[in-house]
Length: 291
Ligand SMILES: C[C@](O)(CO)[C@H](O)COP(=O)(O)OP(=O)(O)OC[C@H]1O[C@@H](n2ccc(N)nc2=O)[C@H](O)[C@@H]1O
Ligand SMILES: Nc1ncnc2c1ncn2[C@@H]1O[C@H](COP(=O)(O)OP(=O)(O)OP(=O)(O)O)[C@@H](O)[C@H]1O
Image 1: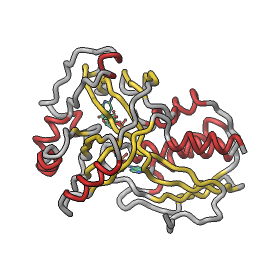
Image 2: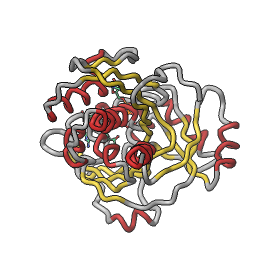
Image 3: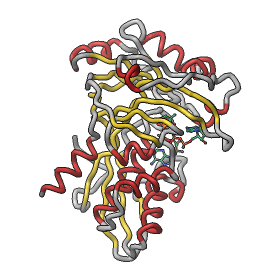
Image 4: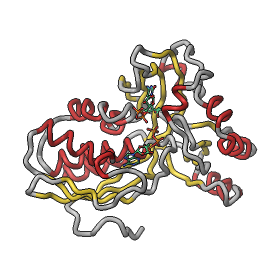
């Protein structure tokens, strides 16, 4: 694919893949308002792309602003600054983002950008903080960042930071993108959200169990998502990822997923991608390490 956002002379170009929550149970709410949950994460081989070049003056410049997100609030800039602080490096970076993932989609775009920034700059700056420390820095930026730092499909507990790697099938997914922004904070703050699903063991999950406890709330509050679910359910069993808005169904091969995608109306954009147990980011970093 031609890439307009990232100059070819960037020192390092890395992917920031999307994730799906294959199931999401809410077990309770902590005193700080955050929710105890159980969720199953798998990566998609589709995502944003970031370019990084070294600066000697310590400045962080993101050259591709996102509408409505101030430079210093962008998770990419925040991740870079956290890494600078934690490592004490005097180096800086020019950064470019090719944004392909929908925002507020429940597929973790911002979190993945943050994780790619942490790992990319750790590589470029030779800060060598190690995966545990990077995951810790990531958690301070968002509950979903650690799984992207680790790069392995995982069963997550706690607020999403306690990760047990899992080996899942790698089917093809059709992800439909209802044209509405769903606020994660609003869904978690809803009085009607159920917060009492009993904990389950990873083994029963892998047998295909589970649901998304956020789905009834999102369906009620966002008719665009409800209508998209009705539509996609005509072809395949469809479910919400994270707090939405994206919904997905799985298929044994790409052709079957593409066929359904072609039958969706133009008002409901979608994409097809394969589920992956090792994220594209980690596969790329492993390839770089071998060079
Ligand atoms: C729903 C998931 O996407 C599942 O993967 C994540 O748990 C959300 O992760 P995220 O987008 O990185 O979320 P954060 O940026 O940390 O939190 C956004 C808001 O969601 C709520 N939130 C998030 C995670 C969590 N375990 N409990 C919560 O109550 C909080 O109100 C928080 O202010
Ligand atoms: N680099 C970034 N990419 C996307 N959003 C960002 C970024 N930096 C900051 N944000 C802010 O984070 C918000 C959530 O974006 P994101 O795309 O991660 O949502 P999401 O897919 O619902 O995430 P999750 O699945 O983790 O809940 C955006 O509305 C935006 O204000």
